[in-house]
Image (cartoon, rainbow, N blue to C red; front, side, top):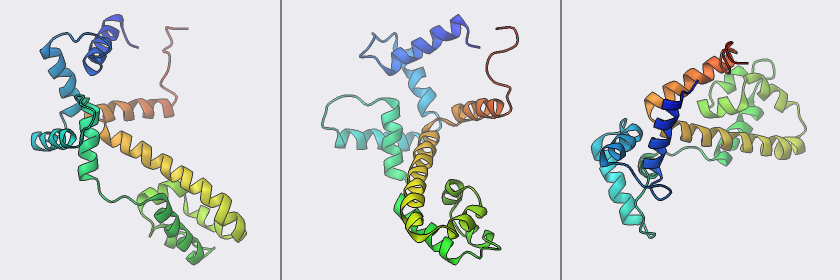
Amino acid sequence: MVTEAETAKIIALLREYYPRDVESTTIKAKVRAWWLVLRDYPYDAMQAAAISFAANDRKGFMPSPGQLVEQLQLLTSRDALSAQEAWALVHKAVSRADLNNPSKEFDKLPPEVQKTIGSANMLREWGLVDERTFNTVIYSNFVRAYETHETRRQAFEAVPAAVRQVIQGVADRLALGIGGMDENHH
């Protein structure tokens, strides 16, 4: 659990990220706070993101570290499938899927689409649904789930690698029922 001293460190860190809310402490603290966010990126990439941000800025405020990461993602992002493009692949896979062996079509789908569907058996189940329900209810549920997965993926990828490892460790512990309050606190 977080100690008082660790809580103070978190507050000091946030003061550096939100200087308009509170006076900043020192340049050393600001550099450390920014470095914790930017340390996984090459200098030239972050410099390009800063220049790109400034070239496109119309508000006149310095960006936060997260805004620079977002700008870099915008500049370097691969062309991800839109929800509608992903649905078109699903629609084709369902129409082609052998109800006795839907894995063949499922395995052809991109990983992000597979993750949204869940399993090859869903292709079988969706193949048994009437066309109207498939094209309305299943479609809207898939699109919503796909967009949610993509938003989470993008947010997770924006986080520095060391922080992703901590988050994954916490998620793993929670999945195993190890997280939460320890036995000494009731």
